[in-house]
Amino acid sequence: MRFQDIPGLHVVKKQLSNAVQNQHIAHAQLFQGPTGGAQTAMALAFVSYLFCTQREGDDACGTCPSCQKVHKGIHPDIVYLFPSITTKKVKEAESDAFLPEWRKFMLESPFRTIADWLTYLGAEGNRQGNIPVEETRKLIQKISLKPFEAPFKIVFIWNAETLNLSSGNALLKTLEEPPSSTLFILICSDPQKLLTTIISRTQRINVGTVDEVDLAPFLTEKTGIELEKAQQLAITCEGNISWALDKAVNENMSATTWFAEWMRAVYSKNLIKISLLADQFDAFSKEDQKSVLEHTLHIFRQCLYQISGTSQLIKSLEKERGFIENFSKTLTGEAIGKMSEKVSEVHYHLERNARAKMLHLDLSLQLIRIFHAKN
Ligand SMILES: [Zn+2]
Image (cartoon, rainbow, N blue to C red; front, side, top):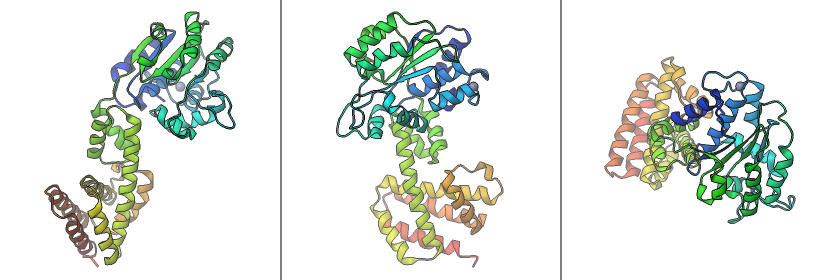
């Protein structure tokens, strides 16, 4: 994770890279931000930068052995503490027992929440994960050795608000008399749940909320959804990037599948299927209907790029690439122009509450006409 992998938040990034460059690094830092925010990613980017052996200006290189180890969660000088649960196999909730899962979970996305983590672990009902006191006690042992290869040892505490009272107090002792060359990095989204004595011993890094203007293109890049839809999600997610990413992936998946089926029906002039799809379209919410049409326009645009030899402009999910390539072969630029026009017209009428089923049916028939005009 590098600073450039996180959308926006330029002031915090600069503050953190400056701290490393000037060697003004507080021995205990609390990265806080909204649930599902960029605080974990920011802390990981900070550690990568601190440990990177080939820094590139204000960011880590992302490729040196050190960056790679931080990325994979296997750096020998980082100790991870995170909430866990007891299972049939693991009688005592402990981070070490869940480390392989945690590494995988973090690699998939560093924006996820504690609720995402518990679901990932298969915790049932409203069981809560916590960092038990034994964990913090074992810490002392783990950090008593000198760093193996980095300039510091790092204690990375994810969701520090899940430290219970006794583990919080045990940690406090270590924070009061920190072993030399040890940095404590606490991540949290709800600092009110932390002991005030812990808060007072840490430097607070207020990571804040990623600006909508920065988040929307990030969502589009990561998931391939339309920028307009991404903008809506960026506004409604209230800083919860995890939620926004999930929503974007799901919406795009369903829109992609549905669209592909629809185009196959148009291509094969399958009128029975087209009538069925019109029924389905009618049953969608207004928002979903619009999102299908927006996705259609998006794919048509990508096909135009493909046809006009500017495929480097194509923005789509990897799995859509094949579809775009094949679909483009069956179309001319002129046909795509006409089809896009028809789809835009329907989008316009939908806004004005025209009957979705008839609109969609009529649209499909017009697309068939344009599509097969050359034959
Ligand atoms: Zn590096």
